Structures are given as C-alpha cells and as structure tokens.
Image (cartoon, rainbow, N blue to C red; front, side):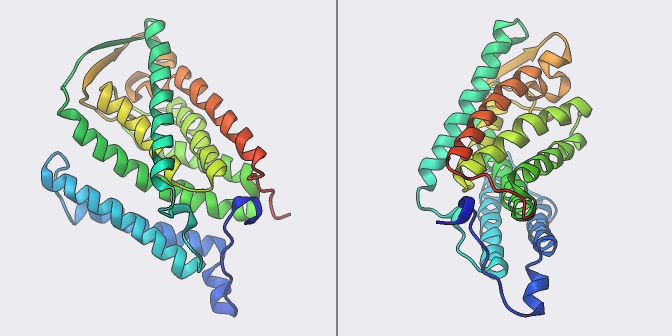
Length: 287
C-alpha cells in the first residue's frame, strides 16, 4: 500500500535521471507537453465546437490529453498510471458527476430561495450536447494540469496542506484572466473549486471523481441553468438571471463567484478533507 495513498515514482540511477526526475523539471515537462496539446487544439485545428466536426475534435483532444499524461507518467516517473486507471473509473466518474450536480443545485436552490436567482425557459434540449462536451473537455484538461501535475508534484515535497494552498491559489489566479473577473472572483474560485477539487483528489488519490465533479458543476451551471460559467456566456436548457449585490449573485462572473457557492463548496471540501484524513491520505512535508 503506497504511503499516504501516493504512488511513488520509480527513481532512476545516475545524474541524468536525477535531473530528469527533479520535481521542477518534471513539472515543466508535463505542463509543456499538455499545454502544447491544448494550444494545438485551438490553433492548429480551428473547428467550431458547435459543429459535429468540432465535437469530434474535442473528444479526440480529451483522449490525446489523457494519453499524453499517461505517457509522461510511464516514461518520466516510470510507474503505472494508477490515477487514470480504467479499473473503477466509470463508478468514480459518476460519483463525481453526481456530487458536482448536487452541489450546484444546492447553490441555485439557496439563491432562488433568497430571491437572487430567477429561472426562465432557455435554448432547449439542443443546448445540452454542446455544454456536455465543453464541460468534459475543461474538466479533463484542467484537472490533469492542476491536480494531476501541479498538486501531485508539489505534494511530494511540501506535503498535502501546502500543495492544496498553492494549487488552489494558482487555480484561482488563472481564472483572473476570464471575462469580468475581479479579485474576489479569483478568491472565490480558489476557495470553492481549488480547495474542493484538491480535497476530492486527496480522498480518492485518483482523477476520475475530480474530473466528473468539475465537469458536472460546469455542465449544470451553463448547460442546464444557462448562467455564466467563469465569466463566459452560456446558452442552456434554461436561462438564469441574477439580481442583488455581486457578493450574493456572483455578478458578471456567474453564481460560482457568489458567497453562497463558496460556503456550499467549502463545506463539501471540509467533509472530503476529513475523509482523506480518515484514510491517512494527508502527507506531511519532507522536513
């Protein structure tokens, strides 16, 4: 049984492997490869995602992203890719998807109860297919980069708590470049999504549940309720309008930047952190 549930890398001998497997070098290699694929999917294959060809390209990119991550782990870290193993993957993904949907539904219920959110008819069922693919693409790419690479590599040296804080801060900071984002929006993303997704990864030590949760939150937010997702415009099955102070409505960034979403997700994160602690999945720093 791996210590703290963390799969150890298979250290090579000699200076070459010491350099290649140094944490910062591994981080740069992994992120460079994955980001090149992500950039290529946007620039080299300029197909609009709302077309059949665009959906096919998105699915191919998802597969390629997972294959590239797996190749990095096998070649550089020289170990089995346990975090993306297909054994039990479907069940874990469904658990994550259900969790993500419930958390956003709870957020919307509270906002509606408080008179902040109003739901009307939207683009209809046709909007769900596009939203499903986009949310899955975002879930896979962001989770492999942030939890699969950043959190996991930082955790090896600095321990779980510092890795959680650093990965959450970077995840929130990356969203600062989204349309309509401000400092509070980035902080909200860091506290709710950055902490929650890291907590779920610590609990499972695999990526499928994390990917499912991330994809489901975005899909429910944009695909079902038609609300802004991280500042981006959405056309969903329904249409949601929000009123009141941005602290409660989320403003232009969307309901995920509301204090309600932060409290709902941070509470869920606390539960998963307790479960991770019960499984002894919280690693101390090397010192």
